[in-house]
Length: 327
Image (cartoon, rainbow, N blue to C red; front, side, top):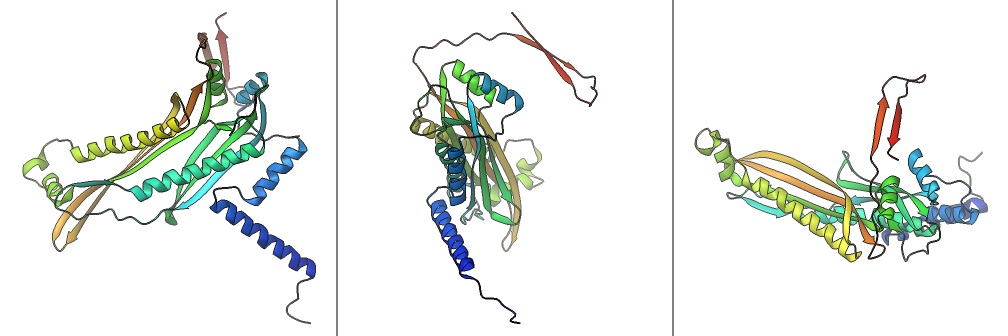
């Protein structure tokens, strides 16, 4: 009996089909699009008429959207795993030097836009008006120091008696915040991002002054180049987010999330003998750009509420909240 078996014609055809699908998905991803299986799944869901929807909305958000007539269609996702190019940061200089790590900043910006773009493409295939409750996360891998991943997950919805726009909107606002925004006469247009990675090297001269027993090392003082780096990184990140908002013709950006990552690095050399103190700064901003639905609109006044939490555990250990509205 032979140790190997020749594949049947059906098996050969199946393998060729798998290779064709893999190649088509690869080309689509390289162009910033969706893999083949994702497009097939969404088209099948559209053809079936959404008999069962999936959502990352909470129970309260779902009930609120249904009460207002919004139809949750499906949970949509966009993801990008990105390789960051090499960029040298350490200077080994006598004087202080500072510069943006442009390669790293651009990698974050491009990976984020790829993930959000694929999220929007999934919503467009479902003929959704937009995506609400987007959870936008960034992840790095310990086994791959030059890799980063951005993932965006949200719920595609359809609005009642509203024409479809050119592209579905994207919003990281919750269901309640989205409802409040519409009641005030505004409409989300998209999620904007801004990233800046910045590196400051104090240089051996200033590091020696700070580390030495004599001179300025023994007194309290601000490290001005490090403080300036925070402001510079914030300015560059906010400028990029503002530029995206202007491209969307937005009147403002709401619900902004700001992340500020800092890492102080100490190292030294033997020949010549010198010590160095550097700062790596990564500033990231994310928010929802909005436009006014009409020039003149009335913002309803807020009704005060009083919420009491009953801390006594129930039968299953749960707590209760009682809310009193002013009539």
